[in-house]
Structure formats: structure tokens, C-alpha cells
Length: 131
Image 1 (cartoon, rainbow, N blue to C red):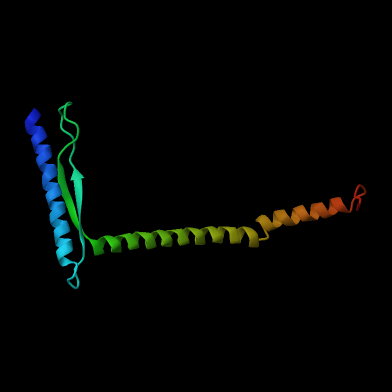
Image 2: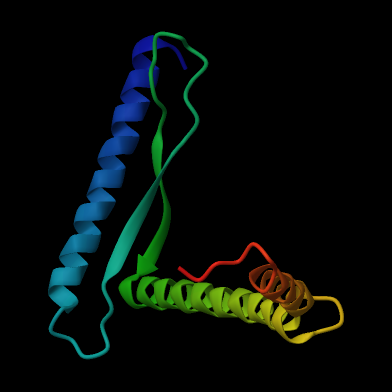
């Protein structure tokens, strides 16, 4: 395709995508009062641009039609999955911190006990004054 033909093809694909969107909207309005009907959304996809440097952009086509219920379920799944991963990470981190605080042989408790033992020794030394 060259020049004007490419521009016409891009314009036609955009009009067809807009028509599919209008058809989907009309179906959503018509089916709104029907029990069990789920809203549908059109997901357009922009094709790769042409090789002609004078043409900016590319054709548009319908990538998928997604039911509103499916989109809601997917969104809720990802939100809950994210919370699950976050709680798993927090659980692993709390185990590490718990080991650091509880294990007297090699962890933070040993260091803190040494610090307080040393500070008590400094306080009871000859240079200590209480006022």
C-alpha cells in the first residue's frame, strides 16, 4: 500500500473499531434489563505503524471483547492475589525478625545484653555522677 491507500486503510480500520464499540454499547443498553446479562467492553489494539515515514500511526483492530463480569472477577483476583503475596512476604519477614530477637546464642538479644551490661558497668564506674 502506498500514500493515500494506506491513509484510507487506517481510517477505515478506525471507523470499523468505532462501529464495533457502538454496537457493543447498543448491546449493553439493550441487555441492561435482562437478568444474567453482563456488560461487554471492546479492547482495541493498534497495529504496528507502516514503513512509510510520512504516515504516523497504524491500523486499529479489535483485540478482544471482554464481559464486564469477567473484568471484575479478574480485577478482584489480582487484588486478592496481591494481598496474599504481601501477607506471605510479611510472614517470612516476621519469622526472620522473631529469630533475631529470640535466639540468645547468636542474634540481637546477645548484642543488646552486651550493650546493657557494658552501659551498667560504665554507670557504676568512678566517673559517674548522678546530678
